[in-house]
Amino acid sequence: VGTPDYIAPEILQNQGKEAEFGTEVDWWAVGVFIYEMLIGETPFFAEALVSTYSNIMDHKNSLRFPDEPVISTHAKDLIRKFLSSADVRLGKSVDQIREHPFFKNDEWTFETLRNATPPVIPELKGDDDTTHFEDIEAKPLQESFQLPKTFIGNQLPFIGFTYSNEL
Image (cartoon, rainbow, N blue to C red; front, side, top):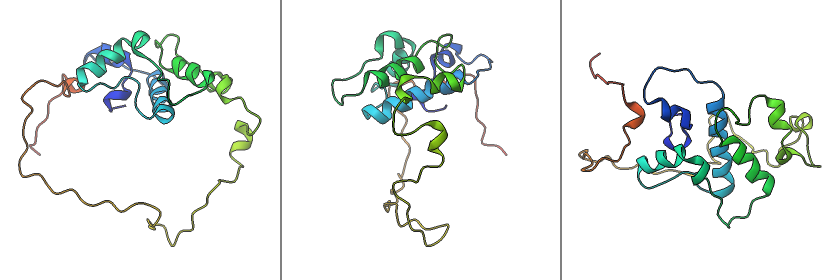
């Protein structure tokens, strides 16, 4: 995952050294995604990127749930189990995730979910029909690119990489 808010702590801890990561880093990102979907913002966000990374590295102390919106204890537990150290992180198997109480309900099962009818089926005029999306105005091009005057840390994920414009 390349978005700073979604980077697992073990990737940050690696600091540009060669390493291979498994699906555990993806399950971390799932935890961030669920938090963002239920709360409306990412769990470790800070104005400065370095602070976001610091919050991720200190996730045991920095993960907090606001009073509003109210989410279930099962949702909080699921998020906590995804946003934990890699060695204990939820996601060793799909069955382990399916068995979490957050997914237990009387309305659907994983077996019946694929056969369920969606609540809304849009009528499309063709494969390229975008009438169900808002029109987005193109942003005017900025005339010049200004470098930030202070270090904000947005280059940290790219330590050890170089870029060349030569083809």
